Length: 558
Image (tube, rainbow, N blue to C red; front, side):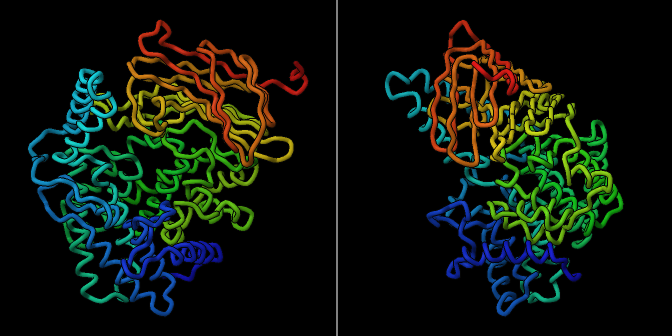
């Protein structure tokens, strides 16, 4: 391994300090860093910890890494007939998914969509018919529980993506540290990787569970890397063919389905760095080089150096701030140095930092200035083809248009054309900074009453457009569920706001609001404010429309 730069050393030291503190010696695994009560461990983070231990190479680190690697491999599913073959339990505390009831290899491509949608319709019908007897929620929960005991529900009983994540970590370990490891560990790792890649290829070819972009890139990398390592010509040919498909798809608009997401861009850049450094095939490296450069072009368009954030809209995302649930700030630090060190604060992605330090960064020279300083007001328009992972595989990729307006202290993001059911889609967003330097954000989300915004939900379509100081939104409802449409406003500290029907006075921003919608309910709690519009099923109003326009200081008087 080459000598590390000051930035790489900092990332390794910071992440290892975090991971050392949550290491459970008895389990030889990390506690789940998102689990404050330490009730479960994290298989993926433990694999990342093994990478960091070997990079640090201190007293006892190699021995601990071997213990961790063995424990991670204990978590692998090894029945080749199951849909989860080769992936890993997310933690030793996770339930083992049911087996022996699901001959998934005998079904055609895309069967997962039809199975899932059929179960959803049965649950809806059953809960509706028995609602008066037992309560709709209880009936639906009982049905879902019964189905999950027979058919292994993806994401609930297993995570297919752990194949690719852990395989990437293992590839890096074998590339740099094979000679430091006992032969028994290396042999067991190679066997685990054979299972993982077989399962990953079967998943891809069957389209049983669609792959989002970051998983597609990891899939390409591990097929290429382990195909050459384990002398599997069919994996090498698969990687080359799929790399060319991916490259052509990306070149249509210079974008991919995982569009404008600070969370997943961090993973994408990590894997593209692996391909740049460790890719074996010229076809795979060619694809990686073109996509990595194009991804930085997209980041340069949507990144606001003054607000230190990626402007919306987001095809997938958890948080509005780039420093939360994201590694993108880590890449900016590697690219720009000390001036961006504050963007590397510890978050739930920090266990990836040893891998990122090895992947490095390769920002095109023409993008660097856009990352260093705000280049002036601009309106951005960009198209991409989305992936609706829970839709009909014959019609799950729609052409979407993102618009973003970036001003000196305000930026607005909007999405038109998406039909994605995922709650991670953020089709209407704002970020701004007040005169005292505090930063705020707003996003529009939807949820069932009493539910969570992040869940998949059918029957709600949002189209939005951004202009100079203006955000226009229209929402269509075709669902029989009680829905709350929520404008969620967050700040860096508790704040006061004045919300009326036509004007929202927020710290640092006043908006004139035109709303074709029911009267809202305003709910404030600490540093978060919700403006809630409720959709009532079977009502005559199946649409809501909003226009939010910034009121300039000279116009802000009542």
